[in-house]
Image (cartoon, rainbow, N blue to C red; front, side, top):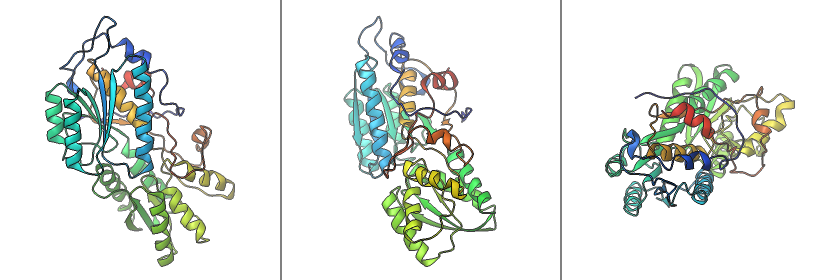
Length: 360
């Protein structure tokens, strides 16, 4: 299975601009289902689009998911007003694989033919995905990917978010010391993937001792559990986290009156502010944006494939920039907020570049 990687670029926060005209131009062409481009039809000759867009989301326990859903809705509204899609549907499965399967089935039965899925299980949805694709539905999994080869699988490159940030942290602490890994919801695909990649890096450094703790991508939980760890072991060299946890971890050190060790930036704007404010004091760390707006790239690809295009490889890995002290201003200038639970949220790849580099 080939994986697509493209050069890293920096983009603005807008997720709903300049998309409708490009997609609308394709509405007169014949469409398809699945990632091969075969199946149903788009209406032609300027007629009403027959595309019904769906989002099947597995969980709403993190702020990332809430922002992701809002990004999806904003772009879906934009496309509906432009006539690119007929309507859209959003369902949340409450962390249940069986519920998600039933909701996917129901959405397809109700007419959804482009279905974006944030999967509760890497394998548990595969049979339903196969059934949906066989009915002409284009299925795109994103964020938490299914392992199905029937779906198009789109994610922000974990090689940057996990591997490169772990390497950067190891270098900053001189390859030794106690590292705390703040992990997401145990058993979810993206959590397991990122943890595995990061641990593989740390395993190359005999001087690094890793402590793993699940914080469920929750900044309040991250602060609470980090405070407990600090009280038991104040000699922490660095903190690696994979999402929505950096600000909570930093605030635990601040509340304890401890110097802030390198904490991996996870795309949250509250920690970006903490980092930026301390640069003049010599504070250094590393990280990568993890935009919830990845869902917008996923829906754009899904619509284009349904209209007859094909992806050039699967999974599709959307690059995100590695952020260090030397380039932090490239995202700082996008406009930050100090509120916990907010993300730096550019669309990872703008629409024109997405179509040029990831479709054929």
